Image (tube, rainbow, N blue to C red):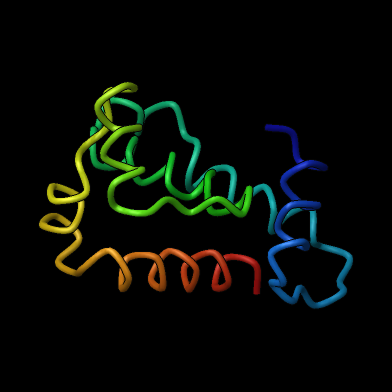
Length: 105
């Protein structure tokens, strides 16, 4: 996913971004945090990254949909993610959105 597409999709989600000259730097931080190659070895991080990318695209999955994606593409199930994150699916979505907003600030 390129930076321009990521920026466009974030704006379409309704995340308010303060106009500043360093918006590119903020987007780079998002990309670094969620798409670092070193994290691809960690199944939880890998699953979380995929959820974040789906969220940015405006398609945060239901539990059933996620479990189907997880099985087909090799991600952790929603139960595993909830256990590791220490919260339910609804709270996980809120936490991920909060993390994105904090990075953008």
